[in-house]
Amino acid sequence: MNCQALIEKFLFDYHAGKLSTARKLEFELHLTLCKACRRYVDSYKKTVMLAKVSEGQGEKAEEPPAELVQAILSVAGKKDRGEGISE
Image (cartoon, rainbow, N blue to C red; front, side, top):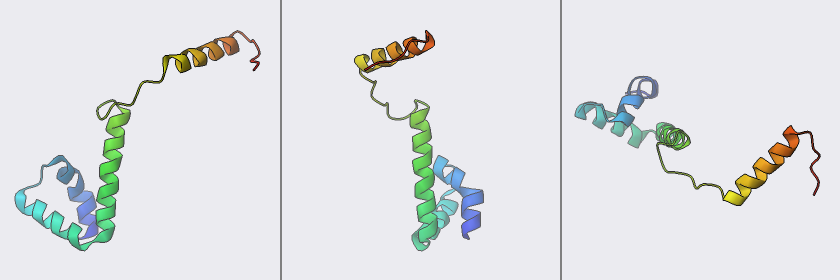
């Protein structure tokens, strides 16, 4: 398996767990021998994880403090009314 085939043909199915056992072993063997592909696969996995988090499917981010939300809304309301913001 060469690097281009690994990326173009098998990466999505590998990550989704859809490769046959033989193809998965071949894929993983290539990864043990190719540092560039290991890095690429690691980057791909992190990108997928971050996308899931941003879509609310992964780890949940903490809610901002209520005081912060109110302060932002207050400033935004003043701006909408054309009022200056003073400190």
